[in-house]
Length: 563
Image (tube, one colour):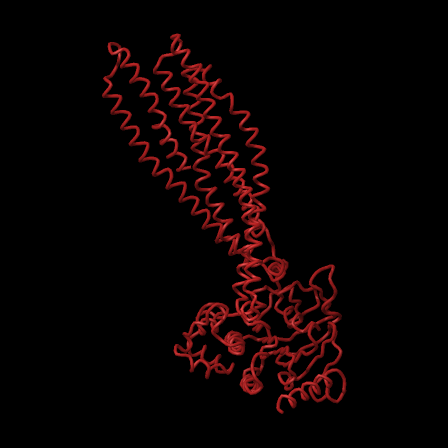
């Protein structure tokens, strides 16, 4: 609103200049009847021009700053929305596509809400005021000057509909391009190891060419639209020169009125040219807003309970009641009829073949995916009735794929707990058998790990993830194959140090190595989403079933490796 007021002031002084010029010309033609000398009108024109320039600065900065603030608010809202969404959303969407919405789409919105709004308001004010003044000077000339405009509007309307469709396609192509670049950079080691640089370059060139084609189609449309706008102004000027000149010669119109009328018509040429650019901005902005709304309107499938259960401190007893789960309604069941009671302070091992549902079972406990009602209970309460923050605060989760932020080792360990001291961080690192590695780093805990922990080995990244979960001091600790990247000796040291930490906590260890679960109170064996065996290490060996077969296979592999 403030920017619109500044624009009104800017245009008021701009519109005053042709009228002052009219009065000056009439004063020169009839000096005897002139109210003021020509020098007076010259001074007024200079003053109006200076005031117009000064006020224009305020109008532009006010509206352009508003566009920046809107971009800032949208970016904050987008980021906040992304953090509320759950794993199913991120499995559907591409990382590059999301990044494209944060960069290119937000830029389009900023341009629309800044330059676009500025020019829309300016055009409306200028058109209305100029046409009113033109009608006052000569209604007939005004009608003649505006005759080409209806045809132009119809043509532009048709072009803008096509431009919207092509703008959507261009934004989607840019998202593909960003995704491709992000994926190639992340997989740089694999690309070089397999000598696929040339193939990846060709693949990127194909996607880039498609994006170029989309933008060239947009450019061709803009190239058609701007000349149409320019032709409208040119035709109006031509009509006025012919008809208005004749009326001046015949004495029906004064020279001052003719000059002022042409001044106002000339003032409409630039807004008319800008109309094509504004329509392009509007179409790109509408396409970008539709893409941003895809994020803003997304809703998590895992939501807070409508009536949260009033529970005290979570103890750690977990019960599975006939749990069956699939990732989508039309996909096969990943888990089937899982029934299991895990007492507080119990240590449970989960083993099985690849794809048997081990990680899925672990991820359902903190509700990373939607869980059917009354199928998982903690301390006798359905987890769907527990507030998400209360549930997840009580759980320390080490995922199968360790993710580290581009910060220091200490910051990564302290990520899940605000205000953790350096001694507490060091103690968690010691339990995770990371202390000796940290001592070898020149900066110790302050060592930067690089993007996704690129400067650390796979085993070091896993141990940082374990230390992060331990520092949280949870009642339930879930370790999803956390030792797959460490050697047998390091694994044994970590398991030995963890034994003292486990006391009083409920622990679930998912592992393909039986050595990691050998000391568990109970071990369950999953096969195709079902519990096929259950018992202690000794009991399962005595059964001579699937667990025993896995044990024999791993022992044989160890003997082969030893020789």
